Each structure stands twice: as C-alpha cells, then as structure tokens.
Image (cartoon, helix red, strand yellow):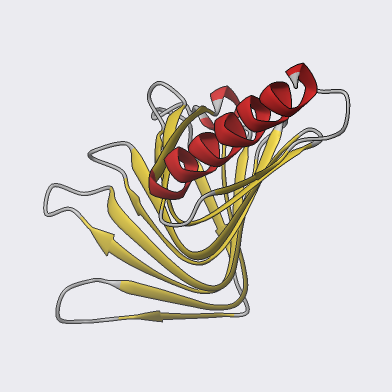
Length: 162
C-alpha cells in the first residue's frame, strides 16, 4: 500500500509540474547578457538599404556579433533610430543565438536594442549544458539574463540531475 501511495504521489507531482511548465517557465540565461556599449559587427551575402527610411536588409548567411553573443539567420531587417544607432533587428529563417554557455534557436527573433530584449518565436529550442527546453516563445532580458519561456514548454533533464 505504501508503494502505491508513493507512486501516486510521484505521478501527481510529475503531472502538476508538467501542467505548470506548459504555461510558462522562467529560466536564467546569464550567458545571454550583453554589453550595450559593445560594437555590433554584421556579415551577410547581400545588403539592401532603403533610401526613404535608411532601413537595411541583410540576406544570406547573416551573422551578427556583439560582445560574446552571436546571432545568425537567413534574413535580418535592421531599423535605425532617428538619433542614429540600431533600434531593432528582426531575424527570420534558421535563427540561432549562441553565447559562451547557452544556445537558442527559433524560426524568428526580434532584438529590441532600446528595451534590451530579445524575443524568439516558433519552434524555440534552448540548450543550457545538458538541459534542453523547448517552447513557442522565449523572451530574454539582455540586461539581467533573465528569461521566460511560454507556450507548451517542454524540459528534458539528463538522468541523475536534480
């Protein structure tokens, strides 16, 4: 009888934990903190600049580096601030974000330089060492390294982890 009660308790705690994860999960991504003063290097096969608003489109094998962070994608649209500097990057197609300790991939991403926030959307997969998390949306605060994953969050922990 004790074994059955223990088994039921373990199953209920697992199910309740899974239900909580399906809604929203907060994770720490210290590796994705960035230096806002660091220069931004952008590489691509093609660059198109709009004469009307100065927006830029980088296409093909796009790689953007700022400090220890590297973002790669098939296409990146850059919106500039009126005062100068980058306001926002919108990336799509095989988006990959890499830091020294974490990697994240998604269908698309928007990096808001003013808010210091990165939102990755669609088939998001986050790897932190041996731990993998997937979700529909990942929002990273690049100031603090804090992050929230939303929409059918799934966590895979290696055996023996706590």
